[in-house]
Image (cartoon, rainbow, N blue to C red; front, side, top):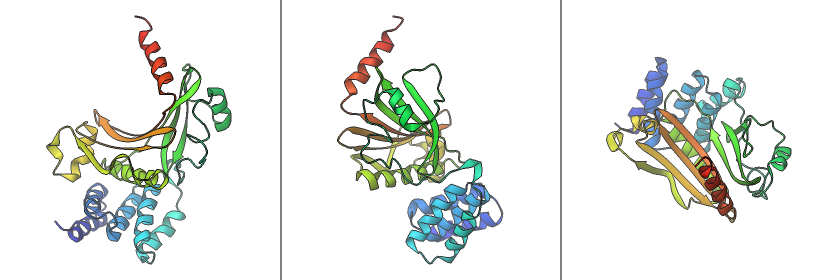
Length: 271
């Protein structure tokens, strides 16, 4: 089935308000041509009806980046701008803006007290002295920000994305969008990339519409990594027991030995 036919099928199901099936056809079209205007507008319209305002905006922006004069995309963008974001979504378009920091407001080796003072957010994790966490929106995606300390020194941090989709294939689009943003900031991945599909069971390999299911069952994963002077960065999309996790992890290169020592101490407790 060609791209135009896939888009037409998606538009047909959209008119019938069968949003789940419509998204499947639009996603199949985008798998062949990510910049397809009609497919991006179509999936944006579908997501708007489902109340996923921010994700809808991302696809409208993609259509407009190809053709700034696309009237359907322009009209839809005006509707979305005037629509209250669903589920308290907040549009945060960048990852860390502090270019002189290793992660957000912090540098590797900072104490927990200093990081909490800089962030100014209450800790949502009790009774775990090596962790500091709070919720945020990063690159337009809701997430938990997790700081990890070893001997009261910051050695690792993560974004644990808390994204909900009715169609699990949309997690792949989230992964692709994050790869694009990280590549803008850190350059091309040192490994992986947008199409780095790692199959542990290729049962659904030839059926893209079921790739989201394959991720949820642990049969498929995606990962990309980047290196900076001080930091190893890993973006990982994987699943287990039908739960899908999208994680962006930052690890200090120079404090890896301290982190390993602290981990070994915990493993030895109770032996």
